[in-house]
Image (cartoon, rainbow, N blue to C red; front, top):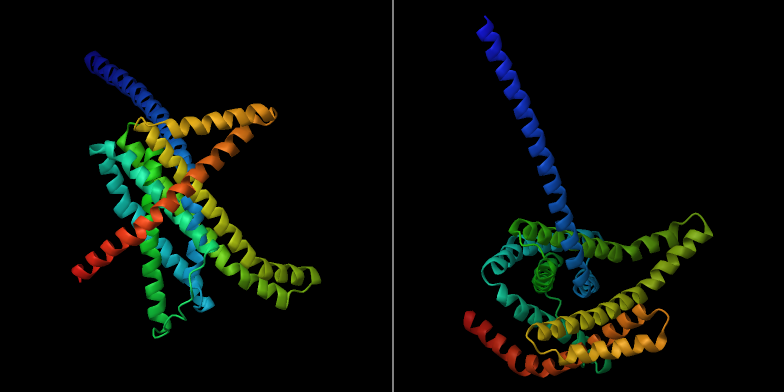
Length: 333
């Protein structure tokens, strides 16, 4: 009997020891989980900030895909494009980014510079079209019915989104500092989902704002609400123009800074040093708010460099890349 009691006492002691170990493991796992979550959120936040120019441009470009289509189809179209964007980011680009990070990290800087150059090209092309509009070649053919037009619009938007999403994911990957593949993957997924919600949530608000304004203007019970509705309707064209201008400026700034930083990584840092010297001198002259002045001057000079680079790439894209792309497209068909 005493032997049985001793055995039970030993079992109880082992159970208490196991409980202590389990509690310690749980505590360690909790701390590690919080640390990983903090790392994921921190990396995702930095990556999302660097992707600002592409995000604004994406939000500015997308509303054009619902123009001249029934108002009832606007939100469903935005939802279709958003689903395609999530597929682009999480199913295609995220695995590609993970493979790049694991097996060819040396390709990241050239790819970033290529993406930055594309941003500069897009921004410069928009400014060039604003300064020298292309001739109107007449109205587009209207042979497609509404269903086929919507299908074509969605397909075109998703293709455009793929390019912008590739830039976002590449920029995001460059900002993630963790050595853990899991943290990198979760951070990229968080960036992809968060930016998609931000972009297409904003687009949904933009495309329906004029309808809301019109309804307020026509059925508002008070003069104030009717005036607010009229103001919303009248301000929407100006707002979309302002967002487009902001997106263009952000693309030139982000694209220029990416290329300049890439040149510094490749040990050609003259442009970056000159920009920093000018920004530092300007900040010292101002004195007060020197940090703000330094940032504004740096961003402005990065943007001017981006504009110059973009203008230089327009002839290359027009006379070399575009003909080659048409040739390959014809041969593929």
